[in-house]
Length: 123
Image (cartoon, rainbow, N blue to C red; front, side, top):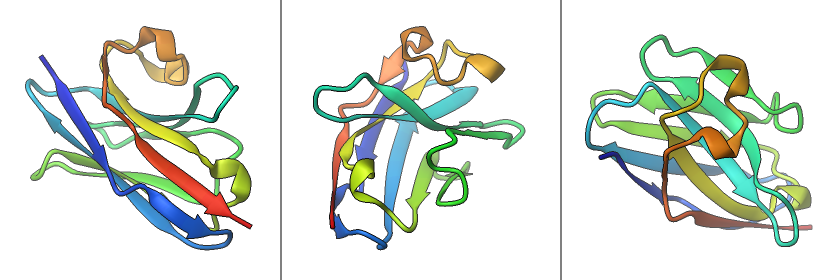
């Protein structure tokens, strides 16, 4: 059983920065991803990282602004959010296990989810 706990959400002004953390516990995970869901919208993939190789994937909407990284010693995956925009406002979720490579952004494939952390960006 894998447990995921997100933290780091909050309110920030447009152009600012925020760092989200996803603490993982349980057996080792291969692919960890960040998703987000805004009110009335579908859940969308933001970024993902292979915990073994460190390979990363990003949604076009966040490329150049967000960075996903990991601290293997602490079993934590981070999402550094820079130059945030009001459209980044959403509940952000951490997910693990089930998806591979090009399918990283398909939420239905993931087996484990965290409870989410809210990000609000004001203009």
